[in-house]
Length: 367
Image 1 (cartoon, rainbow, N blue to C red):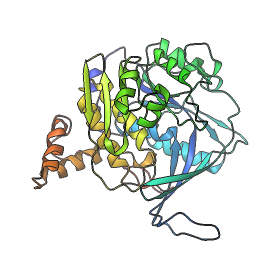
Image 2 (cartoon, rainbow, N blue to C red):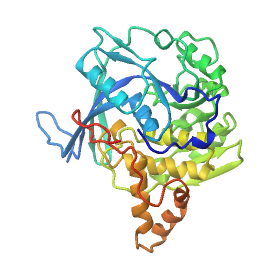
Image 3 (cartoon, one colour):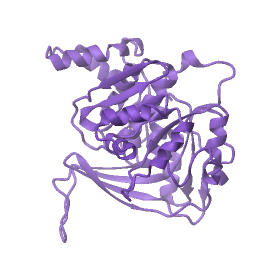
């Protein structure tokens, strides 16, 4: 779908079939944005905007595919209309689904997201899939990288049946880019960090990083994580992102871009897909983080998670607009200076490449 391949210089005759393989739960996301306030008991609140799109692991899959990565997803889908919509949407985005499966009489998971005052609240309904991941996926395809969430219930490298697919892919050469979900129990089991011995990168947010490492600042958490993985990244919301790449001996702190946020759904997933893209392409750490921050900032200005992920057309439009601004403030000059590396990626004229789609059942991505 995209006219730009960020890994063109990396490709050779013995390449893996895919750049990235993912597994997780696909939700049908229904997003309401622009709420003046959350509804109180017995009241109705009208939203300024509404969108529908595949969510959950689909956020990462679509974001990676739109950035030009050859992307394969192993996920369970229901045989209802919700499942059919999510399946078709992912195929239309160029995500390969040979290791996914549709299940009869299984209700597709659904999440309703309410965005108000730069935050969101969600309501979700779903059931456990009929099979574990390894039974459904079988042997994962060869890929340059895996993107997955760590869990103490399904450890890596210890023969856990649910993770056998991931262990096999890792042993076949895939680099594991790991994240971690919010611990609702509040225990923050540090055993999760033992899995980092099998990972290439770890990208928690600041609250998660400090909780799991038992540290009190994002910087201390970053150092603790960097002792365990080659690429340690700690995202810190409006404060930006911190990272250490021990392979290239780079340590970088990047400020966040100032943008008006419409819906934060999936912004972290977009960040992760963009970071993966730059890492596989061999970019300097600062460029990877700037690029990931830009993609995340572009996504929060649109409705939805997966369908808000930017493509190269959106990135080109942003850079051409930013580069041509006459604003001479220190901030504007800093942004133009930090993103000057995009001149080497984006042609002088806007490219005809994948762009974001409106997050509704009726619209698909342009190509």
